[in-house]
Length: 246
Image (cartoon, rainbow, N blue to C red; front, side, top):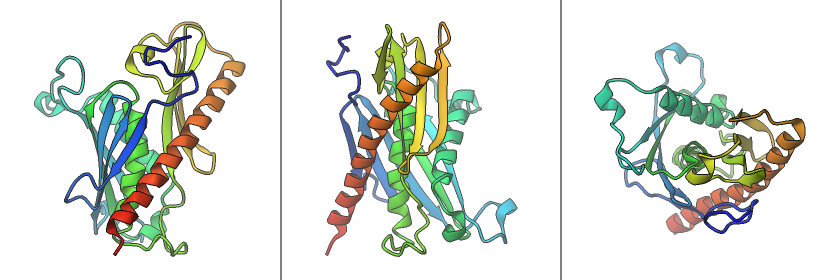
């Protein structure tokens, strides 16, 4: 199968992660995955929600939004509607779950890390790009309070990243752009830690059900892609260190 952008079935779209994209946030990146672009900002608050006070534990939470012209046609801001949509709530929860899964909240102490993920251009894979970028923003924010070389106190256990996979015209494909996602017979988002453990699998058959062989094939395809995303994440963290080196 020839993909619309000429990629091989197991090839990611071009990925760039630009650290320090925002001036004021403790940690921030602009992540680009092909034509999907998302700003991820991490903010540190020296407090936790009221229901967590006195427990000595921290919290990681996320908000997600898409600009009105991130898509081909304008979509109304959710603030103008007066409510957050179900899709937005779902994505916010998976970003928070994914990042809490790799954060030691006891080491974090009574602090809250807010992750704000704003999609400025969408071409498929916005939730996976948001998680991948938010993890780098989180690591950068933690560096303002902790020393990453002090492993006994560093709160981030490992990195987490995510990618989409699917079956289009009978062919398993990695990292679906919108034109592929819209015609996929099977669509799956895979969220995995650097240690090879899964945080969440979101898989749906759009037509006929898929079998275990196809599931295993998609998981293997996604793991290969996520491993390459970990390389991009670590390169962005190294670049941030180089920028601030004396």
